[in-house]
Length: 194
Image (cartoon, rainbow, N blue to C red):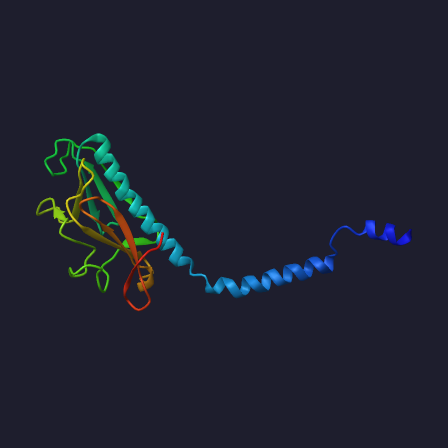
């Protein structure tokens, strides 16, 4: 009878058992945390944010049945978006224009090597246009039929300047599909698995 009472009374954990479990968790965390590259995940999130902006502009062009001009203002770290209501291919002063700034810690970059055959620059590809001589930022236009002005690649990276933080966003001209690539430690590009 004493054994049965003693077995019922012991239902919790002792302080020593809890201390051992916590010590094991702390040791495992100390081993695992240095191996996690948090900057990689942050830059992937930044690339997805820009990717979502491009997708949103494609949807805006389709829904409003008007071209949307996206300008890559690389030296100021933002996208300038203009709803081209008169479809003249120019961002007029009377048309609705707004900016989308890159997430903190991200910037447009010129990579050491591009994913296409063009010389490396902030944005490359046959789909880029320049609105006029005084407004020399590369632009891509999203059309109401779901296409863009052509194939375009946009490069972003971290303010820390690590090669492994560089991301490339490739917009396919005929469908406006946007994929992003990561730069590997050996300087090559790899399609991100999403």
